[in-house]
Image 1 (cartoon, helix red, strand yellow):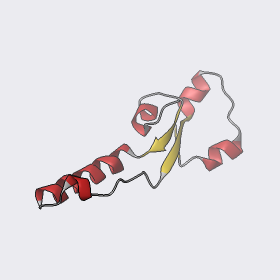
Image 2 (tube, rainbow, N blue to C red):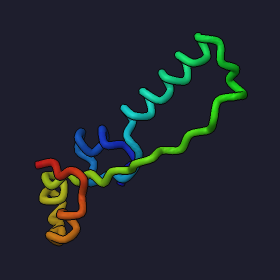
Image 3 (cartoon, rainbow, N blue to C red):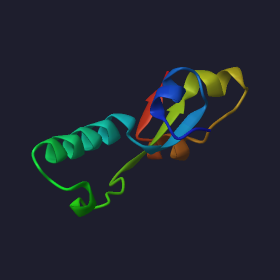
Image 4 (cartoon, one colour):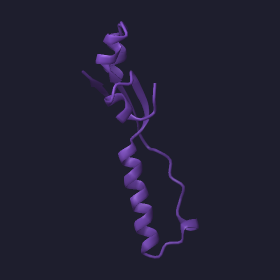
Length: 80
């Protein structure tokens, strides 16, 4: 279990967490605002607005796990 989708794509069983790409885009927006004169202390703290459940079915099969269809149906992405 991991928090990053990228690890699940690389072979982890599953991940549940915010999008790494979205976090990078948000950081770039902060940098843009600071470069354009915003004071870092005046910028709001932001929390992730969406988390995703990603399951690697190939890894589950290799581990001999039989995941319930209802669990797979609730996943945001199923790999394999």
